[in-house]
Picture (cartoon, rainbow, N blue to C red):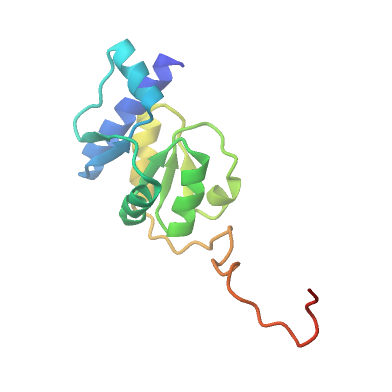
Length: 150
């Protein structure tokens, strides 16, 4: 809803692509596509727009990414769990544990901050602890005989 923020993000994505020598794949929400069209905004060099993807396809791309740049709280959490460094394109987060773990950094919507954060996080080797658990919550438990009643 704020064109200056959207323009900063678009410039930051293109700047990050150029600075890192990587293509940025950007799954674009239909509302964002509409706003961009209404305001005559477009992605810059090095950024390829993707339509919304089915979750498993998106997760597969996300798991193989060198870096995630997102404004989504869910993607911040997934990137942390997948071991993919993340740059959050907001000024705050509801996932502060990802920042504390070293998996995520807040860059806001300023193009130069986005590029600097992308460089910093792309150089990150990962290996942070997963603050969201060890992934074994749904494994079958072995319970002592008689401890479970039905």
